[in-house]
Image (cartoon, rainbow, N blue to C red; front, side):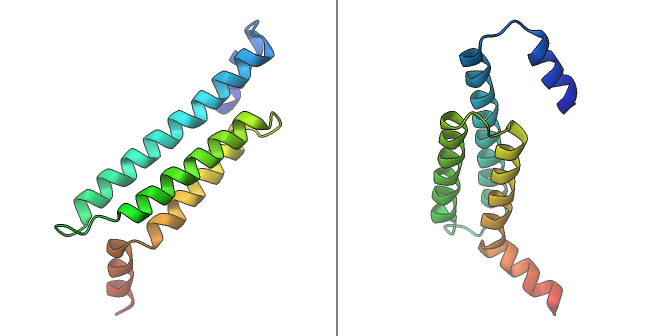
Length: 108
């Protein structure tokens, strides 16, 4: 899928700023979808009144950083930016209370 999308971008007669803007929007869309899924899963799995707002804030700040880096530096590929944010999201979710509790139950 990645190669077909990149081939599509190359086949279009897009100017460099248009292609850059499209790539930034793709990364921003991935950040929004990942943050929304993180929010939903934490809302479902956390106890009443214990939503990890700090973790969500850190996730959004990290997403803004990745999107701004992608916007500023042209040589960052879409897959690198998306992969970096995905790993950051996994790292943030590992330190939430429901995941810590699940790991504690697995170890017992």
